Amino acid sequence: MTWASSENRYRDDKAFDACGLIGFIDTSGQLHSGARIASALDSMRERGNGLGAGFAAYGLYGELPDCYALHVMCQQEAQRLDLDTYLRRNLTVVHDEPIPHRPVPGIAGAPVLWRYFCRPSVELTEAEGDDLVVRHVMHLNSTQAGAFVFSSGKNMGVFKGVGHPSEIAEFYGIDAYRGYMWTAHNRFPTNTPGWWGGAHPFGLLDWSVVHNGEISSYGANRRYVEAHGYRCTMQTDTEVITYVADLLMRRHGIPAARAAQVMAAPLWEEIAMASLDEQRVLTALRQTYAPLLLNGPFSIILARNDEFMALTDRVRLRPLAVGVSGDRLIVSSELAAVHLLEPELDYTWTPMGGEAIIGRLGQRPTAPAEVLRSELYAREVYAHV
Image (cartoon, rainbow, N blue to C red; front, side):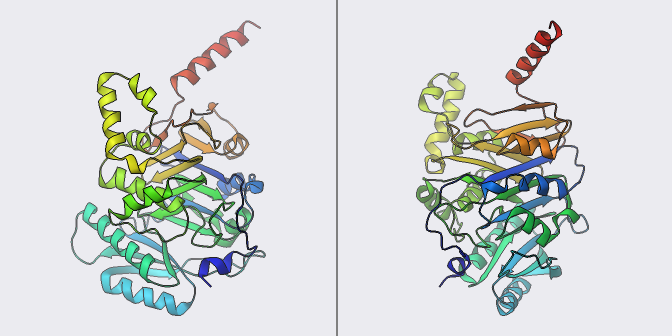
């Protein structure tokens, strides 16, 4: 029996429902307690079934900002010691400790949870250091039985497990963490097992990804990223989205808006209506990265240290609501959760299918032009009532 199957406590074969996801970025860099996002995620409790929930926070390891924070889970202490030996042989471990957690009713079978703050053992550029850490994470997760690295970024961390959102938040003490950007997820597994490693967010370097839906193109996507050195080991389609984002945006340097046009590519009919220069770009993206088109119903939130992006499939088969409040950009499966996280909103809207919602540190968010126009029109109408 595999680790994943032993944790599928309800022996679900297949279930169809909609996961709950939420995330936000404060573009001013102000830190926020995890208490509010935990409460907002728990408001969508019915979107999960207790087989997975999790959070990712950015800006929480300011005392060691230049170290890769490797969060690991192991079935047993012996497997953690094997992983510990590997890390100390291949990286410089600056500090390590158990990930703080507490007993919570409803949380059963928790693995051994540890975090290592590491640097390359030799002088490397940032890009070389990132590539080195990715190789070690891929190697460990594909060869180290019963042990997984589930977070490996700088000044950020993923906290996830099998349980309802309120249980996982209490288990890790999410309210004690502060971050300028958060992503969070309440899981209802579809076609893949509910287990600790398979809960969202998925992390690689400073990426965190949460996802609602099913990626029917998983086979083609997986073959492409594995040809570029990634290894899919977490038994879920969400993992491949993380590697697609890392390949496109970090390794190939493609801006977020263009990466979105790879993952949720415009239809050929739409491309034909674009300007000639835009047609050339969009055609080149579709031809070059055809295997990275994500098919199937989905809404996703992707985040890395200075950038945040939300995206739905091209026909918007999974929900996504957006809100702006001052410096904060918020997205969620449900508008009610957006309001719970930030009661005083400047604007809210529902994005079109395939439309990327992007926020960046230092760039105050705003609503699209059509939302601003409709808001102005509504104010003019109300002014005459």
